[in-house]
Image: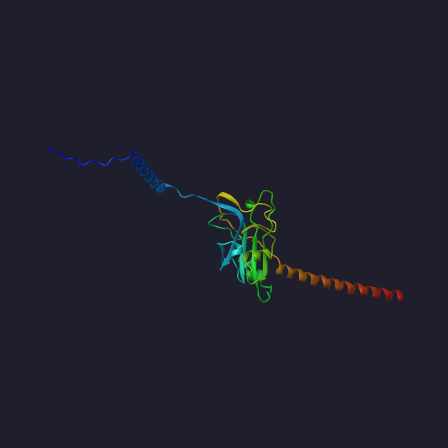
Length: 239
């Protein structure tokens, strides 16, 4: 009597089965963790010179390095030292009613082919300073540069710059060492009250010019009075 062969079930390879089960377990665990994990409260950042541009009435954190950005005539460039995150930069703590473009560059002329750019430099707070470092006073400079000058060249026209490639490490010697150190769990302070900026360059020259004129007038008056006194004294002696 002929026998009929029964179909046989394909045999599973134990290793393949275990691998599939492991992958499924990891997938489920990942979905569960993804649905319950809390968002990070802080992000990594850097302690360095933050670069920004004035757009309208507010500063915008630069998306490129200064060498890759060309400010326009009438622009305002902002530099602020401190700790910031990758997504949120620091802007100068400037009252733009006092140190806007007109206040910084309004009395400065530019020749044909040149442009005027206001440069605000904010050296940051005590909390952001290196240990024992003295923080310079924030300054506002009017840069008169060629029309095609980029952001770094504009900065270099009004301040001494220490750079490492595309990274600005120090402005006018601050900080004295280091260059963009990474900071874990960096936070950006919400308290950024405006501070007073020192107007230098053209504004300072105007003040100096006025002082010089006053000094010259005083000197002339002294000379006249001295000459008059000498003449009176000679007349008395001759009488």
